[in-house]
Amino acid sequence: MLYSLLLTASILPNSLLNKNNPENAYKNINDKLGSYFYCILIIILFVGLSFIYSYSRTYSKVLMQINFVSPFQIIFIFGIAGLPISIITSIVSYYLAYDDNLFNYFSSMNKMMTEKEKYKFWLEIFCVYPLYSFTSFMELTCEMLTIYYLNPFYVLMTNNLYYEITELINFLPNASNAGLKIAHFVVTEFSEIFASLGYMVYLEILELNFCRLNDKLKCKLAEKGDIEFKKLTDRKTRQIYLDENDDESEK
Image (cartoon, rainbow, N blue to C red; front, top):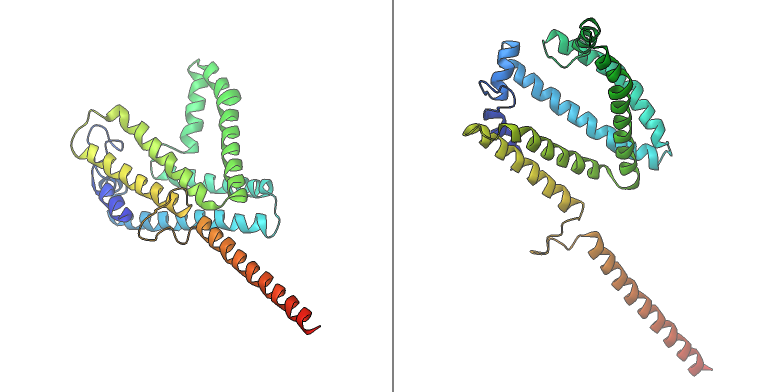
């Protein structure tokens, strides 16, 4: 159900990609790269990155709780590994004519100095950049601590909620656009909502108390365990009492 909604959303035009002439994601890639074939490569790359992301978070749990690696040591490793990856990504984005890259960023910073907007330059250096670095550090720290004290599925659920809110905020300025563009937003939001419900059921935040779907919940298993332990204890106590009475009868 979830994958069918995501596939449908990718086919529908998205006004956030091009406000003047809304197109779907595949048409956008064809316009930028010159072939629809790159869509397959991007999907494979996306699946691979999703696998790496999930594996890294899951293995972080193993490192922290079994190998006793500090969460802050893992954060430091993420930072060291992320630096060359970010540089390579910026180089690829630059040659693909994608605006979000380091070259365009440094060019805009240089333009601030030449156009007598030095206050913006210093504001970026001493305010925006440190604040962004701090918030990114706190985001990763909270994520690692969530994995350490809970489990990685809570991180996936929070990411899902983040994308829901982001999609809503990006759509509101374009809410006047009708037709398939609104349909894209609705389908995307429904896919995120279904994913959130799935995470909540798996993490037992939401209980399904019908068709015996709650039989394997942790709380139910704990109750069954307590009942079985009480029965076993009563049986053992009764057996000890009978053995003592037999001994007294023999004496």
